[in-house]
Image 1: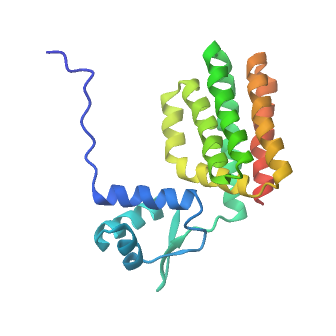
Image 2: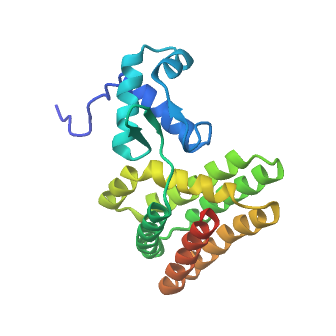
Image 3: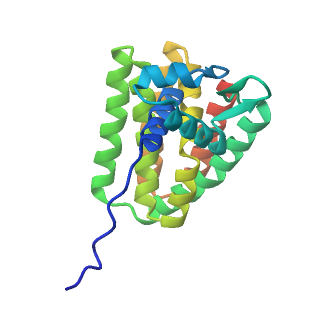
Length: 218
């Protein structure tokens, strides 16, 4: 019997579930930077005992999404200017690499995928749903990472997923209504540049895209 295509079923624990819930709450702004993570309150809110909550908080600390303070427990991490600069510089390197690989692997249906996501951003903006705009923004970049077809790079990006996601959330939140429309149109421009097949121009466009987000956050 050939079982090569079968993979083990993921064994999830309450700690896994609690960590996912807390990550999502941090990404979408429910748990804002500086919010104290009090085990008892979170356990009551999530309907769990304090043990999986404690495990989840430790994972967030390990991932850099939370930090422990002496005699005060844990709180959602408040990013410093230095960290924002580091995340931005790393994203520039990764996104430039992604742009080159996307152009090399471009297929006709990729444009349809990406345009649909941009239209989703536009529709969410009309409904004044900033959370959905952010979600579609993240989906746009995730789709590009998938098109790039580089498993090790995707693995690196996955370890940074929560921080990049938070970065995008803060960048979108800093936009005025007029700037939001320009930001969304800028994603259409990125698709146009990828369609052109010009690698250097595409890399420069993605660099400006990331640095513009950094400046808004700062």
